[in-house]
Image (cartoon, rainbow, N blue to C red):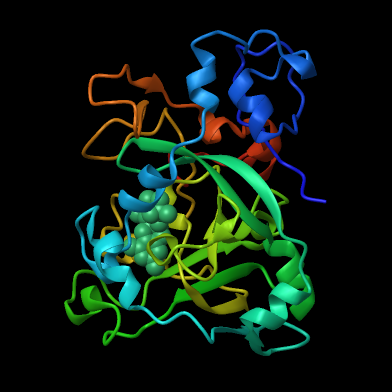
Length: 299
Ligand code: MTE
């Protein structure tokens, strides 16, 4: 049974627990769960799903170009079947895992997550996927592992953006092991109950809802467990602007712009900007991971 994890409610809410809401309950205001404060308020638009059109036509996927429309235009050129992920490093069962084999061993569920890009736009997206922890457990994480490194496919014949040195290819990302094992961290394989569109990272991509969107690396072909903190594409590109952690944090500005507010895609250019929430609204679930860390230093 697919359960729907909806935990991006704010302090304006009546009760500070986790909620599992169905899509229908979110749209109608969740009155049946007693979340009366949501019903009929301005809050309803915060919870409303972005449309398929928004989610699949306004993308960042530099392998296909830097324009927001390029991924929708060109990602169809990428062949995503067959697909495999090489899992290596500090694991018990290293190897090349076929995507279909992985899928046959996973329970795919729907997770509705707030998704916030570093460029200060956000969306609410109904992902389908399974927990990254389940995949890592399939490979068996060794005790000495501390980080997880991810890599996107390198295939310039089909990914036209890779013919130019926009950034260093392939796109790479990383998480600390406890972040990777957190139950909110998803390997997403679809959205709106359809297979993942190419422009969103087919056939399998990461989704880490409390971090800026660039951590959510697309079209993954390699995962490696390490003791060293892995390099990450945007940190390599502009180390002063992008750190390893990249947690959504309204109190730590990007050197060239504020991160305190955001604009939800699809609500028109004149819609009111909303204050950005600490950890993108997932503070209760993830703040403990960063206890005692100076988040202005570890940004
Ligand atoms: N993954 C790869 N391989 N290449 C990219 O350019 N862009 C990132 C992230 N993952 C990117 C990537 C950025 S900046 C964002 S905001 C999200 O993907 C966008 O995901 P979406 O297009 O599905 O909304």
